[in-house]
Length: 193
Image 1 (cartoon, rainbow, N blue to C red):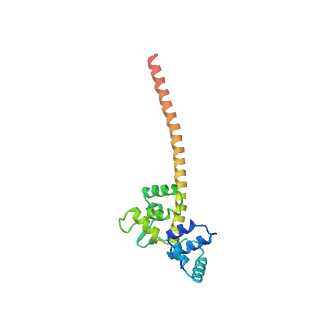
Image 2 (cartoon, rainbow, N blue to C red; image 1 turned 30 degrees about the horizontal axis):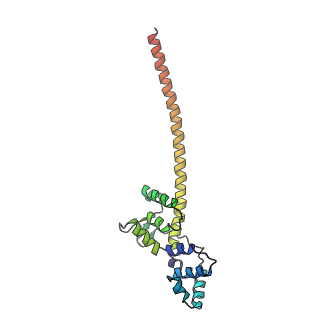
Image 3 (cartoon, rainbow, N blue to C red; image 1 turned 180 degrees about the vertical axis):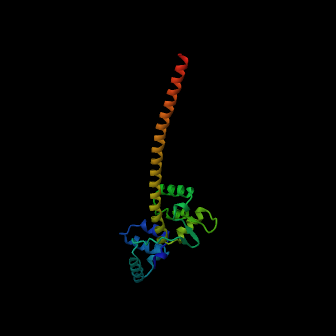
């Protein structure tokens, strides 16, 4: 077993289990081997021990963080210049919906340009079933960092714009005030002569 064998769905389902429970340890093996709990209970104990060692060697907490640009014909956006405003909005909405791990397949659907014009749900379901966790996790971690930097840049830009607008309004206000004073003085001179 390699990290490429562990898909997004496998990892998300395993993370929902209690590692301390022997039954959940069996369930995690069943998840990775696509076996139900009833089926896994019928597997000889030496085979369970073999599979457990395989998983232990893999180290489920050490997800590889591969940064891939393409996966199975899908181009994965890594640069903000390649991402549309709609993708950014969808990404933010998903982050607000809760568990990022349970939405990882949807994040990948948002960040990919499909090889065909398949619907979002269809694409995200395909990623849930087929995308290795290492691919999705690496891309997501990278994009989170890029996204956070993007948010900071926007905040800095808005603050700078606010300062400029504020100083312009003060300057504009002063100019306007001086204009009215000049007009008023001019009118007074004409009317009171």
